[in-house]
Image (cartoon, helix red, strand yellow):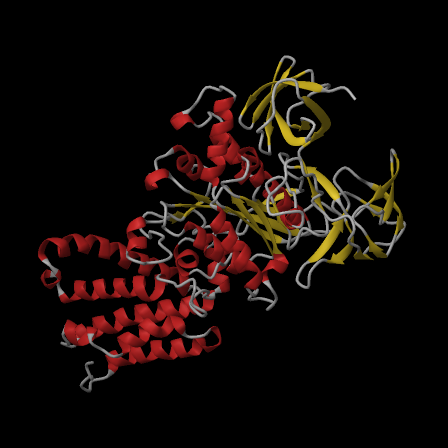
Length: 586
């Protein structure tokens, strides 16, 4: 077997010459330890290779072997509940061989020894095209894994088998123009190439998250893209954990690309203990984890988000709604910057490569709601959420700015809110969602026409509070009119009783859209009642001292199956203004 030779080693970058038939993004094996690498630049006979493992001990003259294939992932039964590193090596199987990832270890992404029960859905003699569902495997109690005809295959279904098979055993034979082709339950797909679909659809349905500030003010559509920038300690990871736990998605792909090891450990410890609110089963039974922490090889961090999005596309093609979380794209961009520096490329702003924006766009553009391949009509979606960790919370830095040019939702985390222990620390004055207008019709049909009006009114009150705070800082609260003091109190109620949400409280961690509507109506009913009482001569002190004010604060802890309790509270608040009897002031 002809081989190339190493001529230079610079950290994770290895330069080799004489590699036969070298092509961009081909996978190579470096040295006799057969470390995994990928060609990222070609100059004449020389190939620059990013190695996905520790390169200590490599030197000029060591051999390099080409595989002739791009970096690909294995797709098939066994993905759900799996925990992979950035290049789809199963970490649980590696852990069985020792505490550390040994250099040169080569394990398949899908287990070869496990048999899966395959149930055919098509009959022999049927004409099949790419994307058609041949049959199903009940992968977990939640997920039905749909075995599809791979892209590029079309013809008559000659044979199809039922029973238990490994991912490498044939389950069908298709007669194509090139001859008979055996199909297995496993597909391979290059991670840097998006999987095909029929048509991209308009994102006009909300992905509910159970997080009040997101669903109410800054919603994300199914198939949408969002960024969560914020400084250290502002709660990016917890927000992403909450989305992974509670988002209205069939499959969750969580990519820890460069975050600290202890944060990824929290995910690995928490997820197996969490229950899926829709089924009552373990949340891991519909989750795929890609863990590439900051102490793992830097080049694998760069590949990890492509591995994650390719797995997400595979489940999208089955007709599932998938949510992918990338934590954090800043660490991924730092890996890109390090490799670019070692390649001696012309640096852009702050040393990041000039192609940073296009690489980010390549990732986020693979999200979306689509009409899947296949003769039967079905839709699938990928909703992409990326955390960004700007140094010092500076949102003008290149990664944040490049991300904001691409995504449609900006959940800006604020360190001042985090210091005040207001979580999620999403700043309601500088965050935005470009899906609000697109989802207006959805909201009116799913929740009611009053939802849009209540949401706009609540946001207007918060904006008025920001203006009035300037006056309060200068001359004090007493200088405000009773009406403005009432506005300040209602704004405080929106912030503390509605937007503040405890991720670790059994009930408050998740709020359905119906409960959000009931809570918002209760808070705003207090303003309506307060205005009427002021008109009847009541003082602002009497109104703010009403005992019912405390019940509003506790309403968010009412269980989901007792929403009528909150509606009754709203009626009580409105009735207060109609009563002419003396009010009991607490």
